[in-house]
Structures are given as structure tokens and as C-alpha cells.
Image 1 (cartoon, helix red, strand yellow):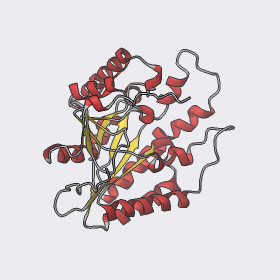
Image 2 (cartoon, rainbow, N blue to C red):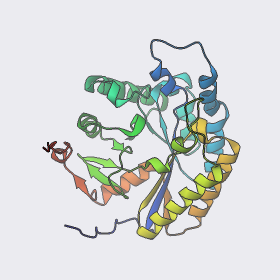
Image 3 (cartoon, rainbow, N blue to C red):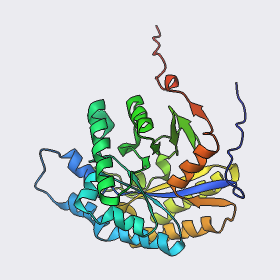
Image 4 (cartoon, rainbow, N blue to C red):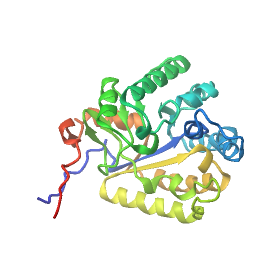
Length: 288
């Protein structure tokens, strides 16, 4: 059966929405990758340290100048290493959300280890800010039914999956969907031999602008994800600033944060509902 879904109900007078998000990975993925056996080399670490030294501040300055509330997903180990980070983001009018403890990859941890990391990260957020985090984004954008159950238990929204163009509810968790092609890492991440050459900044941002316009035309959500150490370079920030300026000029586009988006989604009844029993993969079939 093929049908036309009902339009998503955005707050009046908006017909579409857009969110700007930053995954403040810094050195966390490197620490996870090399846990227990750190190599003696420093080039990749220095590349990643650029974000906390300069790139993140440049991105925040851009948002504050534009009057935009972004959402920053922070691994708790990064917050531990930089204790002024979470309070500083809140002071400058930005939202913060969980991004694991050490950017641990789902395929490499047990369910129990995930729960431990989630609770440990939450404790760090509370200790540094005096408030519980309200949202979560999974490192590498992978999820399991156990993870969703834990997010529901802790009353967290999620922004890790790609099952719709607009927010939906999965296993009781508000889902704010992402897309790989609206993530800077797949175009710009380059750490040496073996990585793909980065794409030109103007070419990628033009692609994002085209997708943003398509989402506006169809009443959808444009969710952009960048990283502190990747897109904090001056030229990329300038190009992203152009994109955000264009979005802000659309008076019928809600340029908002993930917290506000999740609040609206809950208030309007949760939209598309995916039940827990719909999460299992389909049965495999054998052909002879």
C-alpha cells in the first residue's frame, strides 16, 4: 500500500523546521579507538585538539551573532577534560545533550556497559551544570532496542536515526532524525593516508542548501550536524554562516534547537509511532 503521509504539524506560522547541531567529539573517538594502547604519535590528536582550542569558539560566536540556539552533543569525557565547556555553552544560550561517555561504539560494548556509560555521563552533566541532560545522540549513529529502552527510562529524546523526514516516536522515545549526507564528517574528515580527499567547502554547503530548500518545500526538518575540529575552520564557518543566514530569512521556517523541537513533538502527540515490537529485523530467507 502506498499513501501520502499527513503533513507534520509545526508551530504556527511555520511550515518547516531546521536545527544546527555540533558533535563536540574532540579527542573522545581517538581515546576510545586506542583505549589501553595509546600510540606514540600525536598528529591525529593535534588535529582533533584544534576544535577545543579554536574551532568550537568560532562556531559558537557565529550562532550567538545570528541569535541562533544550537544543540551541542558532548561526550562526557570531553566535559571532564574541559570543565568550563558545558556551563559556558549554557551561558551563551546554547543547548547541550549527551553523546556517550567516551564516544563508545555500540558494536563494541555490551548492553550493561552502555547503561553504565549513559548513567556516568548523566552524573557528570548534572555535577557540572546542576541540571539533567534532556537529549542523546549515539556515537556513530547506531542504536539497539536496549539503548532505546534506557533512553525512555531516563526520559531522553534521541537524534541518531533516519527513519523519517520529520520527528517521530520510536519505542516511546522522541526521535529527531539525522542524515549522513547532512554531516560534515563524510565530506571533510581527513586524518592521513587512506582517507578520502576532502570535498570543496563551497560544493558541500551548496548541497546542504539545496537539501534545506527541499525540506522547506516538503514541510520537513533540515538537521545539520558538524564537528568542532572539522568545521571550525574559518572558511567552513563562513560558508555555514551563509547557509544559516539564508534559513533565517525564511520567516516560515522554524530555526530552533533540539530541546525545543522535542518539546513540540511531545506536545503535539508524538507523530508517527514505531512500537518496540516493530524494531526487530525481518526474518532472513533462504533461496535455493
